[in-house]
Amino acid sequence: MTSTSNIQLTEELRERIKIALKELCVQEHSSPSKQLLKSMPGRITLACPYCGDSHEDHTKKRGNMYWDTLQYHCYNCSEHANIHSLLKDHGIRLSNSDDAFTVIDYIQQNKVKINAEDTLKHAVMSSVEEYSITLDDFKKFFRAKPVEPGDWIWFQLKDRLLHNRAEEFLYTDKGHRLWILNMTNTGKVIGAQTRKMKGYGARYLTYDLSKLYSEMGKPLELEPILLANMNKASTLFGIMQINFQRPVTLFEGPLDAKFMHNSIALATAGRSTDEFDEMATVRYMFDNDKTGRAKMIEKLKKGRSVFMWTKFLSDNKLDKYNIKDLNDLMLKCFELKSSAHKQLNNYFTSNQLDLWYL
Image (tube, rainbow, N blue to C red; front, side, top):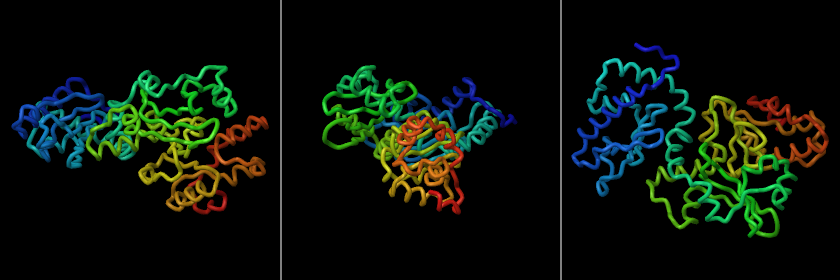
């Protein structure tokens, strides 16, 4: 039996797994179209052997086997299993007798990753990447421009200490809007939020992946469950760059998240964050206002880690200033030449006795 330390899937083993999946599809489906596998980034798609997949369109393949965890999920019947169970359920064996041990150990090795990321990242992110929009296409359709030094928007960003990250934004002169992009690791767009920088109008407009496609005149036609999860992920700003093995900080606004490494922005305080509550590395730093404080009290009562705004501001003699979020804090520290922001990590707590300090 193989050791469970740092097991890798060799190309030879991947090929044998593909052969086994092909054998499974040939066994379970009579339609030649359903017997075909399709290789996608990070996964194999196949017609689900549990439910038979679509009876109208034999080319649909809503079963997904993900290479990073060897987990299988069908977006038609919601059946979920690891590759070992999937093959065993249908009487299929890998051609090499040692492969079963390697596969079982690999699944066990990646069990923590599955528990932490399955809902938000593992089962959805490959699809999000597949349907992401190139930056050139995005700029062309929305007539959005890169931020250049000297642009009026550049000075707006400078006022918020974000001018050094100007390449992460776009803007439109019409409507005076800043575009905050949620991007993949390959530089494609999966979601966006605009912020009104001058004049009247809605301060924020948020676009999930479906809305972006609709605005571009080509609505996404995907399975409802998959589409709903993709839309949810596409407005979790920074989700594609997150390492769940390290502390992950959740903010309300994308601009605040720019100031802390390994963070996610929810785009609104009203959004449910229940899916994060089982993730041991996640902590919350909502805004320092009535709504944000109420949300953090709720999280602390569940034993989750939250930021103690009241204690932090008091300890650092900043409580006399109107500081409602991390961007405000960074601006005030810059103005006062204070290094208080370097102590943020010391003010997260999961102790319910600290409710007083929120």
